[in-house]
Image 1 (cartoon, rainbow, N blue to C red):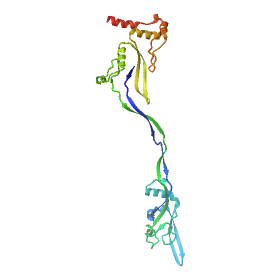
Image 2 (cartoon, rainbow, N blue to C red):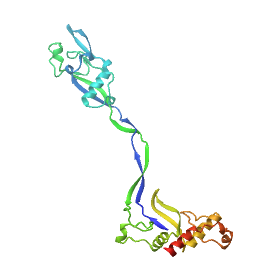
Image 3 (spheres, rainbow, N blue to C red):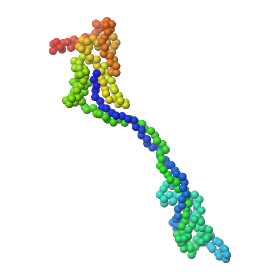
Length: 282
């Protein structure tokens, strides 16, 4: 038997998780307010009317602006843009905002402290502060679907250097032997027998670790001389026997009973005769 050098690997399984479907997780709604001046807001958000009142001999007639909740979605977009967040994080419902440019005349969520109310004119109330009530919620990106991807990763542990004393070759070539990388005595004897054509190749045996071949062992049946080899090879052929396999070689000798069953007239001694001629006449 001889061993053929192979690369060695260190392998391990790994699990890779990748997000195939992303979503958002939402926090609880929080009540918030935003104050803007009347002049900053689009006029289309307002419904314009008149305020008329007469009490104690005093008569008041002014314009009246009421916020139109039909524009709630547009207001939400406006607020989201100002605070720099996603539209899904802002909700604007019904707004109770009424602006009458006169003190104590039914204004709601309006502050006139920054205005000149001597005249009931738009120019006098453009700086009035209007308070919006809205809801806000935090948002967090999440993964809603995680497919699992199992794989095996192998890291080269020790590398076979080309032709580093391959003891399974008849001449055992390889530059490694110049530095002490010697073959065993059994491997040297095998190489010698093979060089004389005294061996029969049985097969190879692979040694694996974590699914990766690390060593390949080649098995042979060798004989002391050519006649022994011919008798074994031709005799087994007659008897329907083989030399086993790489994982289970069978190099035993033939029994006396098996020898008696062989038809020696059918045995081909050509290989023995040719070997004998080479030794005697060459």
